[in-house]
Image (cartoon, rainbow, N blue to C red; front, side, top):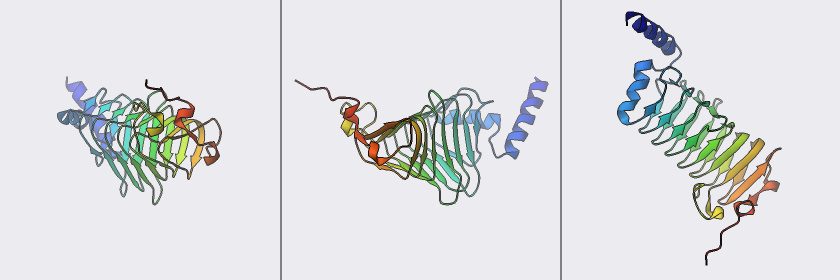
Length: 212
């Protein structure tokens, strides 16, 4: 038992020198309903603001270095390979989002003026990464290994919305998306550079079901 205590103390010391919470402090997040599946592999900045009832899978990193600011709401799920970082800018995450399934997710506010805002009920997975001044409205989706830099995806219904053209904006596939603005019901699906020439209604890929 003494050996384990010494080991944890050493781990905590190294974490704190890098600006992360110690193991017990990570576990203490459970007091507000957060689920921490492996406190030894999850790194959470000591100055990040964490809400309630989030789920953290092993291998999640949440980094925040002044003057950066990082805020997470309630009920989000962070799968393994999720990396969130605010060093020069702000990163704000709302509620009930799904991050990192099937390949991880990265959001980095790591340059002057960077501001990343993510709403509620979104889905961001498959290796997507976000930078710059990016707004991902409630219900929006990033599906695939897409590098998103300074884009605006309009809020709308989530992926559970029955009418595809009422869903929030969506980027799908693989490539680079830069300085784009998508409105409700719009999608770009490509494995090359994302451009506005590729915009389609989401019903193009998910035809509406007629109701008799």
